[in-house]
Image (cartoon, rainbow, N blue to C red; front, side):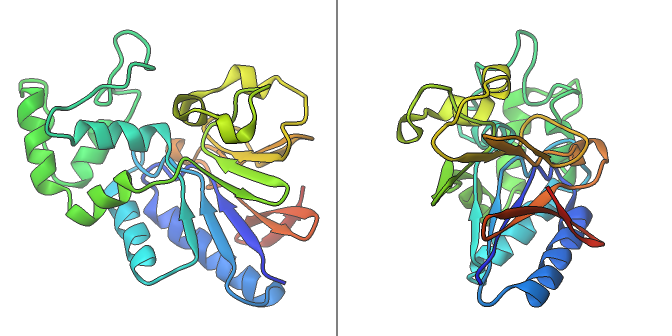
Length: 243
Protein backbone atom coordinates (compact mmCIF):
# COMPACT_ATOMS: atom_id res chain seq x y z
CA UNK A 1 0.00 0.00 0.00
CA UNK A 2 1.30 3.48 -0.88
CA UNK A 3 1.32 5.63 2.22
CA UNK A 4 0.97 9.38 2.64
CA UNK A 5 2.99 11.25 5.24
CA UNK A 6 2.52 14.84 6.40
CA UNK A 7 5.09 16.98 8.21
CA UNK A 8 4.14 20.04 10.25
CA UNK A 9 5.84 23.39 10.71
CA UNK A 10 9.65 23.02 10.53
CA UNK A 11 10.74 26.61 11.27
CA UNK A 12 14.43 26.36 10.50
CA UNK A 13 15.08 23.05 12.28
CA UNK A 14 17.11 21.18 9.67
CA UNK A 15 18.39 18.58 12.15
CA UNK A 16 14.85 17.73 13.24
CA UNK A 17 13.78 17.49 9.61
CA UNK A 18 16.60 15.12 8.74
CA UNK A 19 15.70 12.92 11.72
CA UNK A 20 12.03 12.90 10.75
CA UNK A 21 12.76 11.99 7.14
CA UNK A 22 14.86 9.09 8.42
CA UNK A 23 11.96 7.97 10.64
CA UNK A 24 9.60 8.16 7.67
CA UNK A 25 11.99 6.12 5.52
CA UNK A 26 12.09 3.42 8.21
CA UNK A 27 8.32 3.39 8.54
CA UNK A 28 7.81 3.20 4.80
CA UNK A 29 10.33 0.37 4.50
CA UNK A 30 8.39 -1.59 7.11
CA UNK A 31 4.82 -0.74 6.09
CA UNK A 32 4.71 0.65 2.56
CA UNK A 33 4.96 -0.62 -0.96
CA UNK A 34 6.01 1.96 -3.49
CA UNK A 35 6.95 5.62 -3.51
CA UNK A 36 5.21 7.15 -0.50
CA UNK A 37 4.18 10.78 -0.80
CA UNK A 38 5.24 13.37 1.78
CA UNK A 39 3.20 16.54 2.15
CA UNK A 40 4.99 19.41 3.91
CA UNK A 41 2.55 21.83 5.55
CA UNK A 42 4.65 24.99 5.26
CA UNK A 43 6.55 27.38 7.55
CA UNK A 44 10.00 26.11 6.63
CA UNK A 45 11.75 29.29 7.81
CA UNK A 46 12.06 31.59 10.85
CA UNK A 47 12.77 31.07 14.56
CA UNK A 48 14.96 27.96 14.28
CA UNK A 49 18.71 28.16 13.62
CA UNK A 50 19.01 26.92 10.02
CA UNK A 51 16.28 28.11 7.68
CA UNK A 52 18.81 28.19 4.84
CA UNK A 53 19.64 24.54 5.51
CA UNK A 54 15.96 23.54 5.52
CA UNK A 55 15.31 25.21 2.17
CA UNK A 56 18.49 23.68 0.78
CA UNK A 57 17.40 20.18 1.83
CA UNK A 58 13.92 20.68 0.37
CA UNK A 59 15.25 22.08 -2.90
CA UNK A 60 17.65 19.14 -3.17
CA UNK A 61 14.85 16.64 -2.63
CA UNK A 62 12.67 18.25 -5.28
CA UNK A 63 15.62 18.28 -7.67
CA UNK A 64 16.07 14.55 -7.10
CA UNK A 65 12.45 13.95 -8.04
CA UNK A 66 11.22 12.98 -4.58
CA UNK A 67 7.47 12.49 -4.28
CA UNK A 68 7.14 15.59 -2.14
CA UNK A 69 4.40 18.23 -2.06
CA UNK A 70 5.49 21.54 -0.53
CA UNK A 71 2.77 23.85 0.73
CA UNK A 72 3.16 27.53 1.54
CA UNK A 73 3.04 28.87 5.09
CA UNK A 74 2.58 32.45 6.20
CA UNK A 75 6.25 32.69 7.24
CA UNK A 76 7.36 31.45 3.83
CA UNK A 77 5.28 34.14 2.16
CA UNK A 78 6.74 36.81 4.42
CA UNK A 79 10.24 35.78 3.38
CA UNK A 80 9.24 35.64 -0.28
CA UNK A 81 7.76 39.14 -0.13
CA UNK A 82 10.78 40.58 1.71
CA UNK A 83 13.04 39.33 -1.08
CA UNK A 84 11.09 41.11 -3.81
CA UNK A 85 12.79 44.13 -5.43
CA UNK A 86 10.17 46.31 -3.70
CA UNK A 87 9.82 44.54 -0.36
CA UNK A 88 6.28 43.96 0.91
CA UNK A 89 5.09 43.47 4.48
CA UNK A 90 2.15 41.18 5.21
CA UNK A 91 -0.90 43.32 6.11
CA UNK A 92 -2.33 40.45 8.16
CA UNK A 93 0.31 41.02 10.86
CA UNK A 94 -0.64 42.95 13.97
CA UNK A 95 0.19 46.66 14.06
CA UNK A 96 3.86 47.08 14.92
CA UNK A 97 4.87 43.64 13.66
CA UNK A 98 6.89 42.84 10.54
CA UNK A 99 9.02 39.94 9.26
CA UNK A 100 12.12 41.19 11.11
CA UNK A 101 10.30 41.59 14.44
CA UNK A 102 11.87 39.48 17.20
CA UNK A 103 8.69 37.43 17.66
CA UNK A 104 8.30 36.60 13.96
CA UNK A 105 11.75 35.19 13.24
CA UNK A 106 12.99 36.77 10.03
CA UNK A 107 16.18 37.88 11.78
CA UNK A 108 17.22 34.28 12.42
CA UNK A 109 16.42 33.36 8.83
CA UNK A 110 18.62 36.14 7.47
CA UNK A 111 21.38 35.18 9.92
CA UNK A 112 21.36 31.65 8.49
CA UNK A 113 22.36 33.23 5.16
CA UNK A 114 25.02 35.41 6.76
CA UNK A 115 22.97 38.59 6.33
CA UNK A 116 23.32 41.26 9.02
CA UNK A 117 20.03 42.95 9.86
CA UNK A 118 21.25 45.17 12.68
CA UNK A 119 19.12 48.03 13.96
CA UNK A 120 21.21 50.76 12.33
CA UNK A 121 20.78 49.36 8.81
CA UNK A 122 18.15 50.41 6.28
CA UNK A 123 15.57 47.81 5.28
CA UNK A 124 16.26 48.46 1.60
CA UNK A 125 19.95 47.64 2.11
CA UNK A 126 19.17 44.49 4.09
CA UNK A 127 16.68 43.32 1.47
CA UNK A 128 19.20 43.91 -1.33
CA UNK A 129 21.89 41.99 0.56
CA UNK A 130 19.45 39.16 1.19
CA UNK A 131 18.56 38.94 -2.49
CA UNK A 132 22.27 38.59 -3.23
CA UNK A 133 22.79 36.02 -0.47
CA UNK A 134 19.79 33.74 -0.90
CA UNK A 135 20.39 31.15 -3.65
CA UNK A 136 18.13 31.35 -6.67
CA UNK A 137 16.98 27.77 -6.00
CA UNK A 138 15.62 28.88 -2.62
CA UNK A 139 13.83 31.87 -4.10
CA UNK A 140 12.33 29.67 -6.83
CA UNK A 141 11.18 27.20 -4.19
CA UNK A 142 9.41 29.91 -2.19
CA UNK A 143 7.66 31.25 -5.28
CA UNK A 144 6.56 27.78 -6.37
CA UNK A 145 4.95 26.61 -3.13
CA UNK A 146 1.37 25.33 -3.40
CA UNK A 147 -1.48 26.71 -1.29
CA UNK A 148 -3.22 23.36 -0.78
CA UNK A 149 -3.22 19.70 -1.77
CA UNK A 150 -6.19 17.35 -2.07
CA UNK A 151 -6.56 13.61 -1.77
CA UNK A 152 -9.77 11.59 -1.44
CA UNK A 153 -11.10 12.47 1.99
CA UNK A 154 -8.17 14.77 2.91
CA UNK A 155 -7.31 18.43 2.31
CA UNK A 156 -3.83 19.66 3.21
CA UNK A 157 -3.06 23.33 3.87
CA UNK A 158 -0.98 25.42 6.23
CA UNK A 159 -3.39 27.14 8.61
CA UNK A 160 -6.88 25.81 7.94
CA UNK A 161 -10.01 26.71 5.99
CA UNK A 162 -12.83 29.20 6.27
CA UNK A 163 -15.87 27.30 7.66
CA UNK A 164 -18.82 27.25 5.29
CA UNK A 165 -16.72 28.01 2.20
CA UNK A 166 -16.25 25.14 -0.31
CA UNK A 167 -12.71 23.81 -0.33
CA UNK A 168 -12.22 24.80 -3.97
CA UNK A 169 -13.14 28.40 -3.10
CA UNK A 170 -10.77 28.94 -0.16
CA UNK A 171 -8.62 32.07 -0.45
CA UNK A 172 -4.90 32.43 0.15
CA UNK A 173 -5.04 34.58 3.28
CA UNK A 174 -7.27 32.06 5.06
CA UNK A 175 -5.18 29.07 3.95
CA UNK A 176 -2.07 30.81 5.36
CA UNK A 177 -3.42 32.69 8.38
CA UNK A 178 -6.82 31.56 9.67
CA UNK A 179 -6.89 30.43 13.24
CA UNK A 180 -9.68 30.71 15.80
CA UNK A 181 -12.71 30.64 13.48
CA UNK A 182 -11.42 27.39 12.02
CA UNK A 183 -10.16 25.79 15.22
CA UNK A 184 -13.44 26.16 17.13
CA UNK A 185 -15.67 24.96 14.29
CA UNK A 186 -16.84 21.33 14.83
CA UNK A 187 -18.58 20.85 11.49
CA UNK A 188 -17.54 18.62 8.61
CA UNK A 189 -15.56 20.58 6.02
CA UNK A 190 -16.04 17.95 3.31
CA UNK A 191 -12.67 16.33 4.05
CA UNK A 192 -10.26 15.93 6.95
CA UNK A 193 -8.25 19.17 7.08
CA UNK A 194 -4.57 18.43 7.70
CA UNK A 195 -2.86 21.62 8.88
CA UNK A 196 -0.27 23.29 11.08
CA UNK A 197 0.17 26.98 12.01
CA UNK A 198 -1.14 26.80 15.60
CA UNK A 199 1.30 25.07 17.98
CA UNK A 200 0.03 22.15 20.06
CA UNK A 201 1.92 19.77 22.33
CA UNK A 202 1.44 16.64 20.21
CA UNK A 203 -0.30 15.80 16.90
CA UNK A 204 -3.92 16.68 17.60
CA UNK A 205 -6.67 14.75 15.75
CA UNK A 206 -10.29 15.95 15.78
CA UNK A 207 -13.34 14.76 13.85
CA UNK A 208 -12.75 17.30 11.10
CA UNK A 209 -9.05 18.23 11.29
CA UNK A 210 -5.53 17.14 12.24
CA UNK A 211 -3.02 19.68 13.59
CA UNK A 212 0.66 18.79 13.10
CA UNK A 213 2.36 21.98 14.32
CA UNK A 214 4.00 20.71 17.49
CA UNK A 215 6.19 23.74 18.12
CA UNK A 216 9.46 22.88 16.40
CA UNK A 217 10.08 26.60 16.00
CA UNK A 218 10.26 26.82 19.79
CA UNK A 219 12.56 23.81 20.13
CA UNK A 220 9.89 21.17 20.66
CA UNK A 221 9.79 17.94 18.58
CA UNK A 222 8.73 18.15 14.94
CA UNK A 223 5.24 16.79 14.26
CA UNK A 224 4.38 14.32 11.52
CA UNK A 225 1.74 11.71 10.70
CA UNK A 226 1.12 8.84 8.31
CA UNK A 227 -2.18 7.99 6.64
CA UNK A 228 -2.45 4.22 6.21
CA UNK A 229 -5.80 3.23 4.75
CA UNK A 230 -8.39 4.67 7.11
CA UNK A 231 -6.00 4.93 10.04
CA UNK A 232 -3.87 7.87 11.13
CA UNK A 233 -0.67 7.51 13.14
CA UNK A 234 1.79 10.02 14.53
CA UNK A 235 5.39 9.32 13.53
CA UNK A 236 8.42 9.74 15.76
CA UNK A 237 11.86 8.18 16.23
CA UNK A 238 10.29 5.22 18.04
CA UNK A 239 7.79 4.45 15.28
CA UNK A 240 4.01 4.88 15.03
CA UNK A 241 1.50 6.09 17.61
CA UNK A 242 -2.18 5.59 16.76
CA UNK A 243 -4.22 8.78 16.80
